[in-house]
Length: 459
Image 1 (cartoon, rainbow, N blue to C red):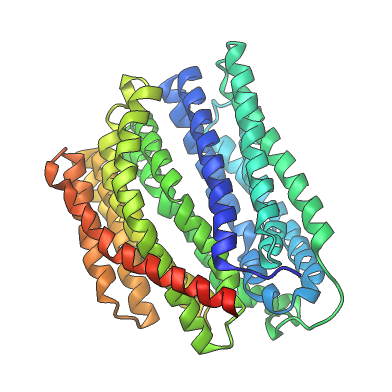
Image 2: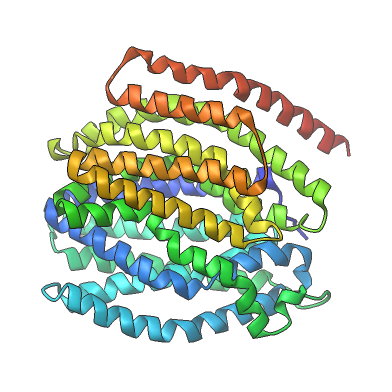
């Protein structure tokens, strides 16, 4: 049976995320061309609102699958079915309350549009248990294909609608919902084919449904807060500025999220990888150190290549209304660097013995971003939102290190390099070449990883 492996699983997840991001960007380009900027911004806000309302249905339970199933793969069928049953029970009141709330907030919006946005958010949540179990059993490749299928179907349907001259927001939301439902069906089908029910015993946290929910509580609370890490600035722009600014910021954030595919893929692969060594402190520390080296190796790629790719692609694919997104992205790019550097520490908090520290970390990130956005957006508009996001990323890096009790000085210096590079790029200063400094630790990290691969092959 396959086991979780950091390098292999990260490559699979990053590869599918990369393809999904490309298809997603094409889809967003289609939406920006087909819809008015205000309609585009409204659709973004409604989708984000439902995603935020439904995230608590997750209840943190798939995270326990990713953390615990690698140690007891023989009970993977029991784990995934218990989690799915609990989530279905939790979902019922959330669905009713969210639809009532959405109707009260957006009374002028067609009810079909709200139902489609609701289906999109719910479909994503209900696919998480089987995706987590696939990753836990070393089948990140299957999870990757299931994720990619959603984006492929959705983007294809967007293109068909554009070809027929459709400019109705509801039709595009329906296309998105079809892609999500197809991916959900594929995830469940594949997940049920690979789960096992033979030997082993799940950890004590799984002894009863009550213990399971209590054990998942830190992750559930965290997940209730987590959407605001990427969506808070858009909500603040909608409240303090306009939907046009939401659309502009969203385009810049799309490019930023495209870059996040690498740290997100590493985070997804790292949780079961660390979870497997949860009871072995020495091995846990070694695996965390290995993840840190991978982060250092990736950093210069994003800082150097990210700016130039976005600088040419946004003007190429979006009209002049979105030209300011490049400057916004350059500030977000610095936050990307700090998020990448933070991955080993905040995943260690998830996989460790004190998961409440991870909850505290995300809470600190959201509070800092909210306060910063509330102050900066009325002053600087979209750029204020970008700086607020950057401040939240800085808190994520520093606080995750502090809560892990780690005093890694190298990352502190690299974080300052990220901020300086992002700012200098946003004002088109030639001094942005300072980002090349990150090549030094990257080269050393690549040497370490190559030696480690040789040792693994010899063993």
